[in-house]
Image 1 (tube, rainbow, N blue to C red):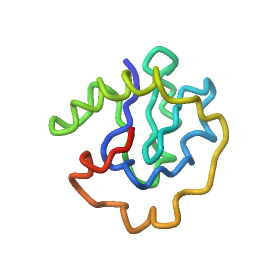
Image 2: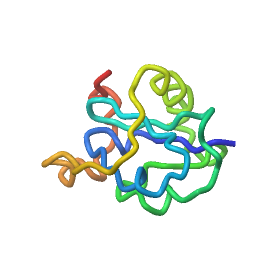
Image 3: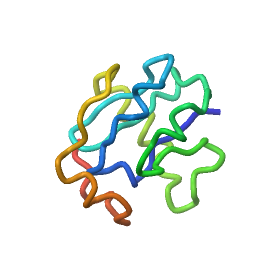
Image 4: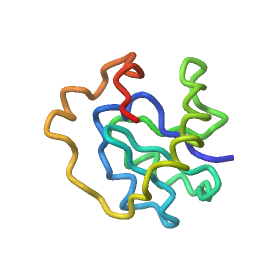
Length: 107
C-alpha cells in the first residue's frame, strides 16, 4: 500500500510533508504535490504533517478522490523530486478547505 495526495493539496501545496519523508517520494508540480507509489515506504509520517489533510493511505482514499491514485502515479513520473520544504504559496491558506479544485490542477 502507498500513500496518495488528494485534491485538497491543489493550490495549497504546503510542503510540511516533505520534511518528514525518509525516502524523498514527493514530487512537485506547479500547484500540487504527488507521491511516487514506487518510492513510498508506507511510513505514515506525512499524513499528520499535512495542514490541508490531503494525504491518505491508498485503501482509505475517499471514493470521490479515487482518481488521485492514478494521478499521483502518472505525475510522479514527470515532475521533479522535492527533497526540502519550501514556503507555501502566498494564498495557500485561502485555498485550504476549498472543494472541487481538480479543474485548477496545473500540469
